[in-house]
Length: 150
Figure 1 (cartoon, rainbow, N blue to C red):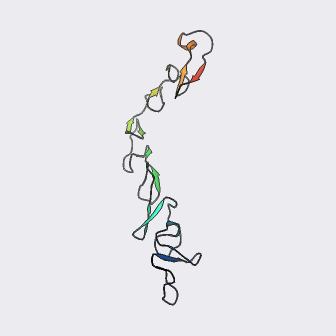
Figure 2 (figure 1 turned 60 degrees about the horizontal axis):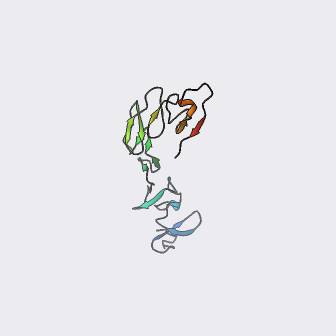
Figure 3 (figure 1 turned 30 degrees about the vertical axis):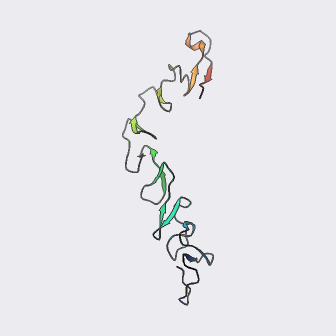
């Protein structure tokens, strides 16, 4: 709790004196630190909580505190699924499956599948673009690209 210069505690139980504004704040409020006498916010505010007088990351699903008190995404190459799993060369991070085989040369990742945009009827020129009938019948006029139904 906060303490005045005369040794008396100016704040009620469960609160602390924040010197920056000289008011009493909930001691569990990460906007005003979790430990005394600091009034600096927790480093990961607004994704923080106070636990046992210390700032801890309060992460949303898909994020984790990897040891620095800040919520970090866990759906990337260096942190795939958790803080300690790193994909290797030739792999990509799948949000549902962890590290999986990356697309082979000449194909790109179109979500749940790899596709060659020059030959795929379902990903013609771009992910989720269906080839028009003219492309499928190999007519000589320019292909028409239409978005695939979602």
